[in-house]
Image (cartoon, rainbow, N blue to C red; front, side, top):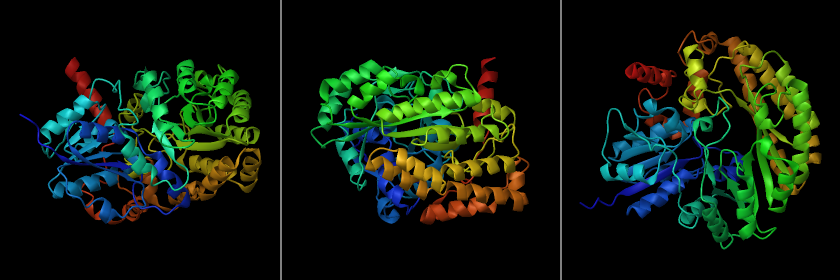
Amino acid sequence: MTPRRLRITIIDLVSKGPVKSTFRRLMNANTASLMPQVVATWCEELGHQVRYICYTGFEDLETVFSDDCDLLFIGSFSRSAQTAYAISNLYRRRGAVTVLGGPHARCYPEDAALYFDYVLGFTDKGVLDDVLREAAPHRPVGRFLSAAKQPTELPLLEERWKFVEATLDKAPLIKFVPMIGSMGCPYTCSFCIDSVVDYQPLSFDRIRTDLKFLQTKQRRPIVAWHDPNFGVRFNDYMTAIEDVVRPGRMRFIAESSLSLLSEPNLKRMQRNGFVGILPGIESWYELGNKSKTGKSVGIDKVRQVAEHVNTILRHIPYVQTNFVLGLDCDSGAEPFELTKRFIDLAPGAYPAFSLLTAYGAAAPLNLDFMRAGRVLPFPHHFLDSNHAMNVRPLHYDWAEFYDHAEDLTLYAHSRERLWRRFVANRGFTTKAMNLMRASSSGRAKYQGKIRRLLRDDPTARRFFDGASTQLPDFYRNRIRRQLGPLWDALPEGALMHDPNAYLKRHEAARIAAE
C-alpha cells in the first residue's frame, strides 16, 4: 500500500524564545543545526510536503507556529526543551503527531517521550521512513526509535540547499553555510556527548561535490564545519579542499583539538582559507593528550598552551578557547587564576567558559554523578552550560564557586582585557565580533545574581544543596518571561524532570541482563 502524503512541519529551535540582542540578530541563524535540514530533505525524497522553519527568536510566534500539519518534527538542544514541549502541545491540540530529534532527544528520551509521540536517537533515513509510514499518536508515552549508529551518508548540499538558503536569509551580514565531514570523536572526554560515538568520516568525494556546488551559489562563502572534532584525517580534508577550491575563494571555521593544530597544519589551513578555529582546552590538570601538552599541568600547561594559541593566531585570525569550570580535578582559586594568566599570555583569543553540566544520558560520567546524588533537577531551560551548573561541585561550596566564576568572567571582559584583545586581533571582522560579543555578554551580571540568590534566598540554597526539589521563584519567573506566549502552552509537569532517569534505565538494564 502506498503511504499517504503527509504535510510535515520541521522546526529547528535555535532560540528558546523571543530575543532582542543585536549580536543574536547577527549570529543566531548561523548556529542552525544541520540535521533538521537533512530530515527536511529526506522527507521530500520520501514523497511528503515539507515546511521548514529555523526559529531564531526574532520571528512572530503566532505566524511561525500557526500552521496545520499532519506531523511536526522539532530539532532541539536541552536549553530549548521547554519551548519544544510547549510547541508540541500546541500542535497536538490541533491533531498533529509530533516528533523530537536532536541532542535533547538523545540525552533525555524518558522525559521527552512524555510530550512527543516519537523521540529519535541516532536518525538515518530508515528510521525516518519508519516514523512517516506509521505517523500515529503514541500517548501518554511516546515511542523511542534509534538507528544502530550515526548515518554513513547525508544529502548533498545541493539537495538541501533551499533549506540552507532559507536560514541564511535570516542572517543579515555574516552567513555561515553548515557542512559536516565526520561523526563522533576519537577523544574520550568524560563529559562530552561525542566521546561515546565512534569516529566515522563521511565521503571526501561528496565533500568535494558540496564545495564545488557552493562556489556556484555564493562569492567567497564561509563554511562552518559541524564536525565534533574537525581534521582528524587532516590530509584527506585539506586535499579535498585543495582539489576544488582556488586559494582565496572560500573561508572556513571549525572546532578542533590543539593536538591537530601543529604549525605545518596551520600553514596549510591558512593557505586554504581557514579564518576561525575553536580549540578545547577544558582543564589545566587533565586532557593533556587533547591539548598536546602531555603530562604538563598547572602553570606549565598554561604557558605551553598560550604559546600554542599565539602560534595559531599568527595563521588564523579568530580563535575561541573553550574551558569547563567546576571539574572534579579543580579546587580552590588556582584553576581560575591560571585561566586569568592564560588570558594575559594569549590576549588575542576569546575565552569561552562552560559550567560542568550532566546532560542526562550524554556521557557515562553522568552515571557517577547520579550515583553520588550530585545531579540537580534544574529545568532543561537553563542547561546550556552557562545559566545553571546542575552538578554539585566536588571541592567547592556553591557561593565560593560563583565568587570565582564571576571574578574570572569580569576579568576576561574587563576594559583592559577587551582593549588588549582588540589590539591583538587581526582584521575588522574579528575585532568587531570579539568586541560586540564581549560587550553584549551578561554572563558576569547573571553570575552575580546567582551568588546573591544563594546568600539571600533559603529556598535557593536548599535547592542547590540537593535538600529540596522546590524550584526557586527566580528560575520559574525567568522561564515564564523568556517563553513569552508559549508559557501558557507548557504541558502540566513539563517544567521539571527526573535528573536520574538515565541511572534508573541503566540499572534496570543491568538487572535484566543478570
